[in-house]
Image 1 (cartoon, rainbow, N blue to C red):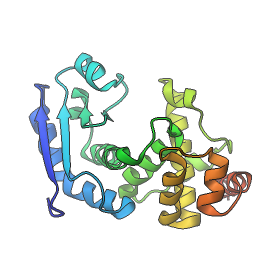
Image 2: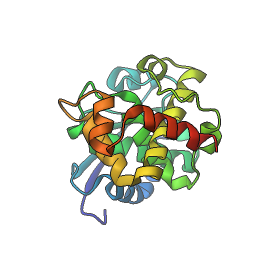
Image 3: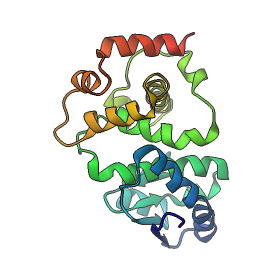
Image 4: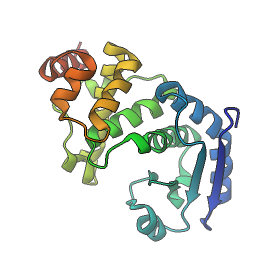
Length: 220
């Protein structure tokens, strides 16, 4: 790739897996550029991307459910075989989302708040669309997603992910992408404080103020 990174693309025998990896190969340089533009260039130089043979294998090796296109583990990004059926535009978002997880994994604690890790990953992934989450933000409850909402399959999880994306987008809009990255590092790194302290340390404001501003941003 242009930045000198290498990628191993592995098809474990999925129907359409070869075609899927061809599309991923085409999209990968742009995805690495997008991740480095936000996170900086210091992340793993070797990228491993695997397409599972079956949904059962995807669940066993990567913990992915039937409504998940890809997941990221400590050493690889794994795509479900069903990802071969999604559009190139959607695949572009998924790849950038998962590649951010892959890049940030060494600096992300196991107990990091899921709503922030997923919201930032969606921010990085969806920047390519050029579309802010205004339709989501218009219906904001002003409440951050809970771990349970993000873990339970169904429309509630989709809405929770959208709230997480909206919050990350607001932080980037109000405090810059440097502010969003600083918040991620402060709130998600090993030994991180709770979110109230992390917001104060990273952004210099109190969490209730940020939540109020986020709600106003989403409901102009």
